[in-house]
Image (cartoon, rainbow, N blue to C red; front, side, top):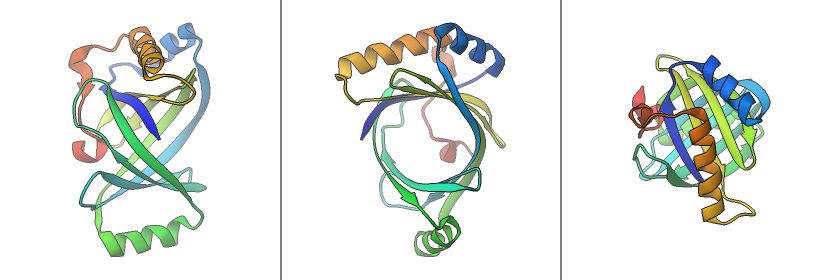
Length: 165
């Protein structure tokens, strides 16, 4: 799977929420997420636990640049998150654990995340999933959402939360 994404430091989640309403984006849900990043030789591998009820393993590769970039990823659902976390921790070692509160909004094929990250602050992420559209169409949608949110170039972040902690 492939998406076009970026992350930016946020100065006001309330302002972004209003801009999402004005854009007619759809609020989906708010969740608590715990991402356990494991030590791997390439890319990033994390166990994502959501609201202590569901979990998935996510592997992704993307360049560490601040502007919008393409990310290739794979996701696998995990049924026994506690045992899986222990097994992966023993086998690979834990790099870092990131805890956040995430609001999920949708606009077309674009997931908008409003994140409050423990020890880091507030961020916004866009992930435009490339599915049933061309890359050019995905880029147009991605830019439309980015413009509607008023993201400033100086607020863009190149690293993942794991590297920022």
